[in-house]
Amino acid sequence: MLIRILPPHALRESEITPQPLYLNRRQVLAGMGADVAALSLPLSACAKADAPTDLAPLKIAAEHEQAGGETVTPFSTVSTYNNYYEFGTSKSDPAENAHTLQTRPWTVEVDGECEAPARVDIDSILARRLEQRVYRHRCVEAWSIVVPWDGFALGDFLKQFKPTSKAKYVAFQTLYDPKQMPETRHGILDWPYVEGLRIDEAMHPLAFLSVGMYGKVLPNQDGAPLRLTIPWKYGFKSIKSIVRIRFTEQRPPTTWNKMASNEYGFYANVNPHVDHPRWSQARERRLGELFKRDTLMFNGYPEVASLYSGLNLRMNY
Amino acid sequence: MAQTGAAKRFDWPLLVWRAAAWALGGVPLLLLGWHVLHAQLGPNPVEFLEHDAGDWSLRLLLATLAMTPLRRLTGRPEPLRVRRLLGLWAFFWVCLHFAIYLTFDLEWSPSALAADVVKRTYITIGFAAWLALVPLAITSTQGWQRRLKRRWATLHKLVYAAAVLGVLHYIWLVKADLREPLLYAGILAVLLGMRIPWRGILRGRPLPRRTT
Image (cartoon, rainbow over all chains, first blue to last red; front, side, top):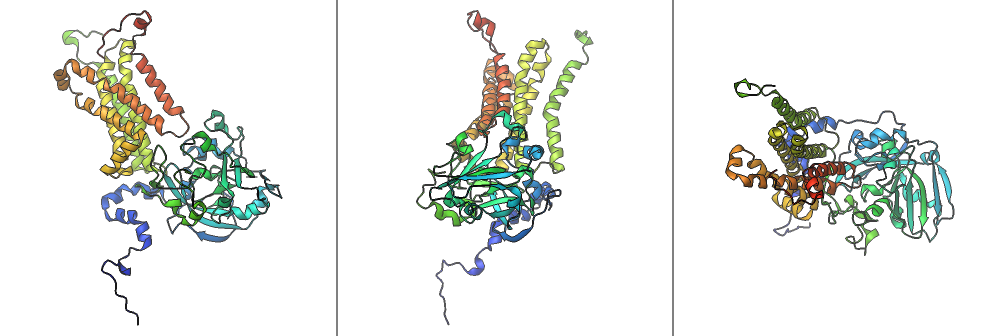
């Protein structure tokens, strides 16, 4: 029989706070004070479980919880509070204005440094085997949500076009149609919205292409009919309503980087240690919570760290 | 309108202006309270409260600054007599805005506040605007006005600094869409511009001394 003699400083197993309790420590503490409970009353009232109504359901082959068991944000929040500047710059604008977006017919053009460029119809994309992944989503503005996305691994999708050895990057482009997106007439950003990933980032198993959320097709305001979902990067990297994907040898331009390169880098990895020049990135407000919580390195996806070994993350923000 | 001697019983115009000033400062507060009670603050309640209080801070500061030009344009005495009331409402909204930030963003941590004030320019600017308004609110009473005499008017020129800092604070935190903060900046520029004795300057006269 092995007898372990513990050093006096050692923690017993029983003394360790269970991880779910640790992760929810704010709610647990909040629950202890009646006054605090009264404060959060308006919140609990709007956080009622709800599901999308008029959106077409999707057939989901597998479900993966990849947000550390954190509470999923209500659909009503995710679909009414987000940024999609083509439909206005306030958080409620996309939900109000995106009804003008026409998601059929819709084709995605895939070309550039690949052997099998193609124009892919959105319905053939929707016919793929779909899985659901619950991911954390952290906006560069320091708010966050937890969303069950429906789609497939980006890498699996990209491989069918046989990228060549010259394909060092993948560039993405959002639809740009001032008729459907009247807010783009005000300028503000350099349209069309463009984003990009290094090819190894795009091939990482966590990189995801979403066609739906909460088991239904994407609402227009959340980037229908096809959007990127890169959980370890700030939200603006997860480009919406994609019409073009291009393999490139050179690093492609990205919209927010063009807008203010000192504030928004190409990588835009969630990093609590590298602040936005104007605000701190150390903490974030999870929608549905009153107080802020700590932001996690790579948004709590440490498995992507190896992509950036040797890269100075302070310089390459 | 006979307003002479004993015939002056009830100053209706002043009452109307006072009521309007109370409404401008108080109705948004009642609305906000209603929204809180009915849980209609949207998906990010803290941001809603913070932005609403910030918006009304700026609006009331601009309304306060509009009173002197209004007095000149209308020739009526009431604007100057509701100026303090509007200024105090502006200060109330700035304090509410600051308190929401201190509570929900910083959880009343002095070190977090110090870090933000030092590192975040828009916070530095906003904090400075609040700081500039504190002595104005304190010395807003008639007693202080008497005690400070001429210096009172000089001290209360700080309101210009507070308004400029307040608008800058807003411009600084916006990501890309500057339309709304620039609207406030434009109104402020007009209100400040109306205080400059353009005619004298254009005729090459030296600037006259002014008290307000």
